[in-house]
Length: 558
Image (cartoon, rainbow, N blue to C red; front, side, top):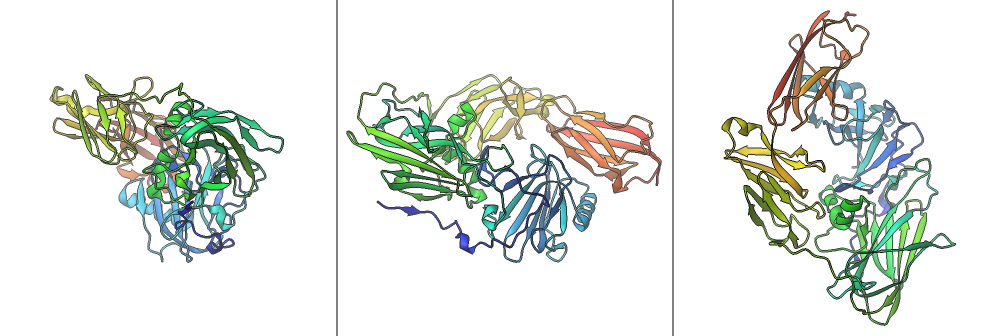
């Protein structure tokens, strides 16, 4: 049998410097998340390092280099820093509370010059050099972080994220990976598993030696397997991803997945590698241990017949799955297979509709006032879609099929009053039937939104301006003892788009924490040098409604 090696992207460990980078934190490293673990629509590209449930820990340069990129955004990595090192690798630090020293000054000066909080900078290599051990930032909880931690990455010269553990970072781990579920998938038209043509969950039994054995199954035809697995390191209960998964069939290697490196251009193919339907229905990731059409993932490093097995009638066989963590802790699953071509009692479930989509063709569909454009390769495979329009609402299938590239939904709004058209947007309805803003553009009587999620969409209107409320100060009061000015901003419908604040007519930098709906100004910026201060804040939502907040406060000057 032919073994295909997809190892071109996986650099040999002997070529990777294991003593070049030091710990970016001056504490023992404990993981909240590891490299390659599966998140919604992407693989995790680094290590999430716990920061003792607090912010403000010093972050140190792990090697000499220079600051090559700085990004400040409300979402994503929040405040992020990139350092390019002489050996060609780049280290990345995300969710920072603030930068340190000259880096912080450079960022703050640029924010005031451009009068914006969000920015992306690419400093000249001579501007912000760093030495190993320099404090470059302080850990935080900015952006899409779910709690205080440091997101740390190491990228190669092509900006592909690599597993930082390959570089010698030490994470104590004596725990064996856990396998919590096992599934079998009939693939060919004549395939069956336990007389079923549908995904089948298999019962696992733990053996005395710690390994697992599944129930004996009857099967016939071309089939594949999938598992739900996670790993834990010492000192934390977080359910992180595995490092390597290897399968065999009657002693022949069939499939290997190795989380050493991947590229950002392929990360969304996670939705093809995992059982998307099962995840959306059960909120549990199943890794399919076979390569389907339109799955180019480089983490698949070995495969025989794309990882599938073909079970013949009247033949018994053994399929095994081995899951390893980076430290070599391993767990094995054995699956006895009894080849039998039996009567099918549970035929393949497939709902046929009027709309059959060929994945490699572009498709346009019109339903009521809605037009849908599905570009070629937006879907991974040919499928029936259930699409129905009722008035202002489009039932656009269910979110049980992954979408790889954006699909356009256009609504005809010619029936609306002209005065209302600018306040309309396309929103995706949540489980309570409330529209969640979907990025929308208007061209005359056409509203267009792009989406990579199936579900129910509607033409929604937002005529209500945002709400603004002071948090730690009151009109006409002295606040000399406070270091920060805090204002809460909310918008119940389309959401916050932008804001701008001034004190005594001078721009002030207010940092937006969308998780708390709070804008914060740091008085250390020294923009205001007067005792009597007039604050003016303008907030605009995603359809252009604006609210203005004006107040006066007093502050003793040093």
